[in-house]
Amino acid sequence: MTGQQAMFKIPKENSETVTKISFMIAEVIAKRSKPLSDGEFVKECLEIFASVACPEQKKIIKNISLSHQTIARRIDFMANDIESSLKTQLQKCVFYSLALDESTDMSDTAQLAVFVRGVSEDYTVIEELLDLRSMKDTTTGQDIYEEVKSCIEKYELQTENLYGLTTDGAPAMTGKRNGFVVLMRNSITHTIIQHHCISHQEQLCAKVLDLKHVMDKVVQTVNFIRARGLNHRQFQAFLADVGSDYEDIVYFSRVRWLSRAATLKRFYSLLDDLKIFLDNKAQEITFLTDEQWLADLAFLVDITKYLSDLNLKLQGKDQLCTQLYEHVLAFTKKLLLLEKQLEQKQLIHWETLSTRKQDTLDFDKYVLMLQRLRNEFDDRFADFKSQPPCMKVFQNPFDIEIEDAALNL
Image: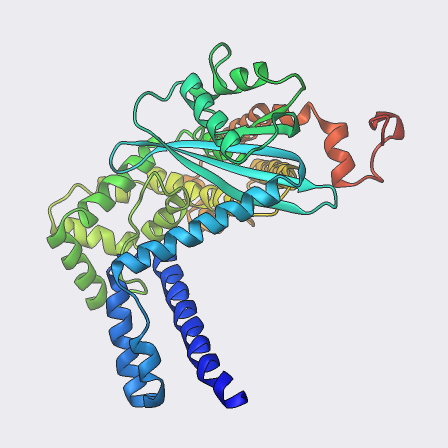
């Protein structure tokens, strides 16, 4: 009887193994955004491996179905399972908040990303991308509201448990009359907390640095090299010939926020090489010999590095807004320290600026820039200052006056 059972057991186990491998490969293909037809290529590679390393397993690999139709079906199954699991977890949440970001993709279709963060009664926190809604027509506050409302209904979320909204600050989101936030607030009976995305705020603050004349020249030079194939190849060969520490210059993209710091740092490190290369190409290089322009560039390299460090701290999951605001407060304190040191002509925390001659540095101008930057941070994050007692309870419950705490606490 045991022998007869084995006749059914072994094929069943093999069938489950084959199906499991098919799902796991489909998951990898989906995560890497690879074409669905790559499944056949993966299967061919597995067969080559099995024929050499483990010929006895070749039959199992041959039975794995990895056609593009199967991969598509597997991905749909996994997507539906994830959606069902997310819905089950969110229904256990007693409070949740939404974060929205609307942007346009390569096909000029508006994509509305909706993120959710919820907490259950046992303090289990879930933070996930709730949905990605394609908006083919207009993107007014009413349109966004309808999409979010549809998303809430799809996951069977209770609006009475919604207590927080974070947006990218666009007029359609925050308009005083027909903005999404106003429409959402009017549709519910309780008060919700609304914030402008901290990462977006930080980038907007950086725009007050009045050094457009520096950035324009840097971008113009980088584009001259990177946007033309011949120039790019010749520049890479030139760097190799002179024995440079770097193989290329970093391309600047406004969409990638952190690329600014990398581009400026690499540009400054390649100043001498750029001067020779551009001169050989009969390009205008007077700005590369202007001491005041180079000093402004050095200042911009350092302050952009500090802003990028802050931006990195503001990214990532599992951070409360109190923690994010602490990073911002710490940065404003750092700006105050840097400001006072520049007033005293101390450059200990200015790695790049300290390489320039002090008699070419306009310390007063740089101090004013830091003051404007610090004031911009204070103004843009004023909505957080309006909730100090509430936030302090979460930051440090022992560092708050008992009378300032909510009565139920």
